[in-house]
Image (cartoon, rainbow, N blue to C red; front, side):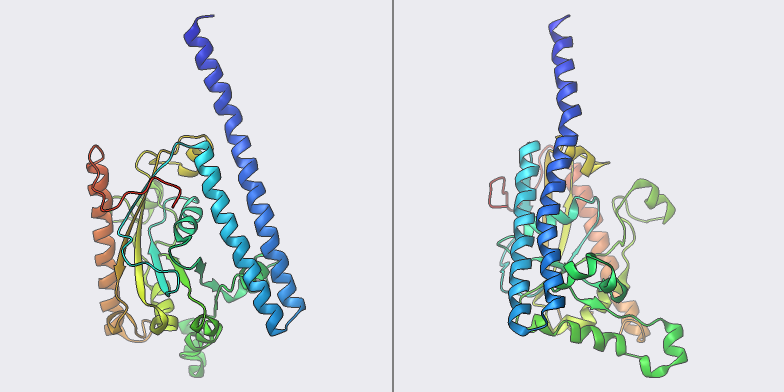
Length: 320
């Protein structure tokens, strides 16, 4: 058998075995730390005492951080990744942030969780009230102090006007703990992962993005706006993996992860009654659409200059 054929055979066998091994280790990492978070959530349910609640939250966040840390180690173990970060000026772990981002892959959540380590508080999601009662998901989310939002439809408000504004007030109460606990709330503004098929289906005017959905981020700002120190507009790019990023990572093909961050102020121009104030709604949509136009251009500029990428900061070390 020619030497080249033997080499190709060995390479093919290696790649065939790599994906199941990588998947098994990532699953084990999730099961270990996710299981610990779930246990702390159940303990919070069974032991409704302040000192127990605080202790469970500390333990849950410790597990969350270790899940993120080991995800990074596993990604680097199976992939020769170059991590490129820009715009990280003045980020602090004792501040409050709203993080908005484009959504390309299931890998985005581990990437953003890893990005947050030692830079900003661990990212959390606003969850629908109904998820609180879903086994494991509800208890784990509660253990991690993720806020549950209660939304009333326009039909419900029309039928019972007393409900107007109640959803914001209820969500504000669930966020009371964040007054003393620095927090990052994350929102994938597109509402779904970008694919070419979804781009066609939604008739997206963007080249690399789906249309931004303003309602969720406006609700978050109305609930917690006065607590946020800044909005972090994050752009995620996987320049060498345009299609199935997670699959490529499991196969050892992930080469570069690009995270570009822009720090935006939080002021009265983006805090208001999105659902009942037509003037504010239009103004907010224009603000968010302008951000999305800029983000699409940003991605296009990076990919178009792939041979000489512009970087304001470069981090290929273990500090990620």
